[in-house]
Every structure is written in C-alpha cells, then in structure tokens.
Length: 381
Image 1: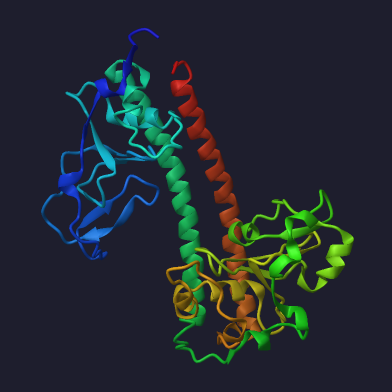
Image 2: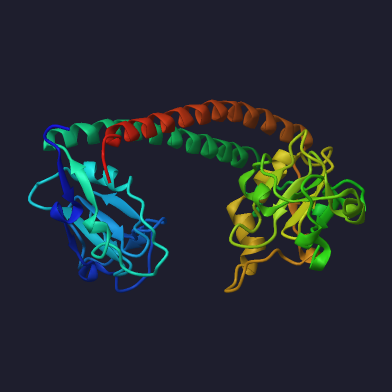
C-alpha cells in the first residue's frame, strides 16, 4: 500500500499515568459536573463535584492496563484508579480516531494479571497510511457507527415509550395513586398447586442424569436473555416424570432467582420444548382472566417495585430470591382486565416497530463491521 508505513503504536502514541486525576472520594451524584471514568466495560462510574485534577488535554484514549479494554474520550474527566494509561497522539503524527478503530482490531492474550501497555500492546506493529487517508477512513467508520448508534437509541426510545404508557395508564405500582385493587400472587395464578414453583434443589438435577436429547432443562439464561433457541441440558422420560412438578409450558413466566440479575423474567413462548426449570428459576402460571402476562412483566420490572421487594436480598453475598412466604405477600395492583388489554394492544404496536428497528440495527451493525474489515483487510499484524 503506497505511502503506508509499518510502525509500532508507541511511536505515535504517548501515555500518561492517571495518578493526578484520581478522585478523592466516590461520593458520586448525577447533579455534579465532572464524569468519573474507567477504561473497563462500565466506562462512566458517576459524577463528582471535585474541581481539582480534571483531565482536559483532549481527545485521548483511556486504556485499561490489565484487560486492554479502551474508550475514546473527548470531554473533561476524572478517573477511579491508576490501572489505566491515558493515550495521546505524539506531535500530530496520526489521527486518534483512526488509531482508536485500529486498536479495536488487535487481540492479545490477557490471561496473566499484568500491565500490558508497555510490555506488549505498545510494541504491536500496524500499517499506518498517510494522515489524510487515516482521517478519511476514520470519518467513514464514524458515519457508519453513528448510523448504528442512532438505531440502537431508537430501540431505547421505544422502551421508554412503553414505560411511559404504563405509568400514564396505571401510575406508580408501589404508591398506587390511582387506588387500584391489589392482590397477591396467590390470588392471580391458576388454581393449581404447581402454579408458583421454585426449581428443584439438592441433587435432583445432577449433571450425570443429563442426556443428549429429551426433555429440556430451562436455565437462568432463558430468563435473562429471553432466548429460547438456546438448549444445553436434557433429561429422559424417567427423570421428567420424577420431576414433573417442575414442568413449564408455553405461557408460563420464568423468573431468575439468584445472582446480579435477580428478578429478571421471560415468558415461555408458544411452541417451546417440553421441559422443567432448574434450581435458579421460579415459574409462575397466571390466570389471565385476572392479570395478563405482559402486564405482569411490566409490573414486576418497575424499578421501585424491585427495589422495595428485592433490595433487601442484594447484600454482600450472592443476591437471592426472597423466601417464598414473603414473595406470596407481595401486593400487585390489578386494574380491570379491559384496561390491561388496551395496554397490551399499545405495547403490541410498539413491539412491531421494535422488530423493524432490530432488523435495521443488525443491518447497520453488519455495515459497520464490513467497512471496518475493508478498512484494515490489507494489513499484516
């Protein structure tokens, strides 16, 4: 490639230790002015009111020295810890956005707990085109990324719209300003002993009983991701009959009962495989003449409802589901079923638009990845 030079990253990127920019306290509040960043996945940790030691020599890349995660930053900030490098272009020798995209193509083994920028990452050689070519490539990728992000934001706005409709129609489920009648979960399920059931504990589902094909074992993954194409464990006819009390069917609601995603839930879709839940799930079979499944999902996932009834179970250890006796006393507002039906119709229209937006998001993601691959396809590591 004419005019392209093979260079190591440390010949175009200087680094600075972040020591001067570390916050003195983690007393964050959204009303404060200065963002506190980490180079890891969470990126924005909060906002600080501290006015000293703010990094302002922008733009830069913040680079996690232990995981090699990184972010492009073009606004003033402070940091949480010293476990990163702040990277800046030397003497306008390269385009930082180009380097940002190029760094994203680098994969190294980070299994060892050590600092990687000086020891390894900065020594990696990349082909570097002329500056104008760098800027042109970066702009094309920026435009594709902006299209992708705009579509992702549209999905988020659909979710916010659905939430707004719920609050407008039914109000805050915890304070119940519209004074709806409340019922417990026992009042809302079908008249069956197995309508509220936690998965089997102890040795009931030892891995040695799993078979290659048979009845599906539903796992926490299904509740967390609402993905029912995932299949990993099966049991045979004999074990299914032994554990039949834990059977789930289409229309049942499954709820995650432990871990950081405590209370995440999903509805078993029509046509799903016959099977049982494991110990990390709770199943609920609602009487839909009293409460619709989609209404229950919105109710259950309201933030203040979750904080009120699950907050005490998020201690220092592994968060766990409240005792069943406590869960059965949770009050659920129960608006008339005709209002729930109206809500469902509105949500159905939003879901149709979300489905189209998801297709567009996948297309824009594919476009971005295609352009990214094309931009660097001629390079040699």
